[in-house]
Amino acid sequence: MSSNHPPFAQRVDSDSNRRPQVRAVQLISEPQSWHFFDSQAEFFRANGIEVHAASSPGICLEEFGRANNIPVHSVPIKRRYLSPFSDLLSVWRLFRLLRRLRPDILHAHFSKSSVIGMVAGTLARTPIRIYHNHGMALCCARGWKWPALWVAEKLSCLLAHRVIYVAPSLLADAERMGVCEPGKGCVILSANGLDSTNQFTRSLYGSEYRDRWRTSLQIPEDAFVAGFVGRILRDKGVDDLIRAWQLLSRDEPRLHLLLVGEFDARAPLSEWAMRAISSEPRIHRAGFVKDIEAVYPAMDVLALPSYHEGLPYSVLEGAAMELPVIGTRISGIVDVVRDGISGVLVEPGQPGQLAAAILNYMYDPQLADAHGKAGRAFVTEKFQRSAVWESILQTYDQLLNRRLQRGRTGKSRTTIGGEAFGSAVIEGRVSNAGLIK
Image (cartoon, rainbow, N blue to C red; front, side, top):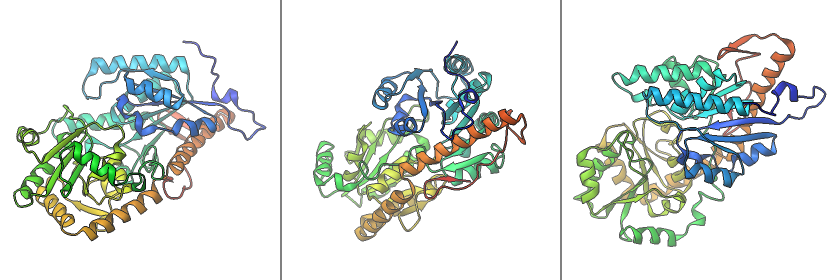
């Protein structure tokens, strides 16, 4: 349980403006999600932050550690809610890890891992605890799930010193539903930004990528392809997308549907949707694709008819690849799809509206091209990785400085998450993808 990592206050030279070495633990539940955080660690390392990664075990965790040259730690966390025994075991394992590492910052992402993280971090007396909210299933929960999810969100927010939301609409929802107290939350657009220069740019993926993917999936060259990228489950509106395709398919033989992603058993599709996927020759499955940027050229339009989202990366990626995007008018999506400019917003659960939007793009290629170009311009302006990283670093610095100031003066003005800090408000803004108060 011992560590050679002294507390932050003991590593500060009061006569120096340099940041002392700071240790931060990034926590998620599923190791498959680590690819969303690629390249971030190098930036933080250059700024005096020693990053550790913790999640459920898996090859993706190990590969992330090797690729980013950071230590990784296995903490099994079940993504499913209401698994009390395994959750308590996860809290205990994370508590032991935090007591051994003695990080200055625990930065937990996603709802389930953040509940585990905020409880374990409080018990381990981790000086700074950040809950990074990527979306709330609470927004569309029904029945007994709603109070359970509300309590989980409320607990995470109470025990955190700062709550970061990936979209302004999510912060507004959290304050409206009373899970995050006003002044405690802030917005940083996404968790890692998007590399729209060296990765998600159509100029790097010529017609050969479109031809290769279409040939491998047996999609005709002249087909119009509506694509979906993400976990294939009911909450993503995949049932609605298949219904929309069925409304059009008889009269539109050129229309094909491409599903990219893995099936998720937590909210399985309906039986008729599964039958359609397995029996319709014009519905294609690509499964999980690691280099996802190479698949987008095979599509003509991207659809994400979700019922709840955080900040959907597939929409950012598709827009960066100059695809027009059809999304639902819900929190998270409304922040990245500009209705009538870079895409179309439809009401959730309305396959008829979804079908009409697909058909409109199919018969108006000039509109599709204009919306695709506008979407790329918006993404490259608002979601640059460097701005996102700077915003996270600014958050770290401000919380660390307030912690240090409290330690020096022995006084505080505001209590956050059970510990006293000098202020509850992060001041100022960073332009574009930066911190939004």
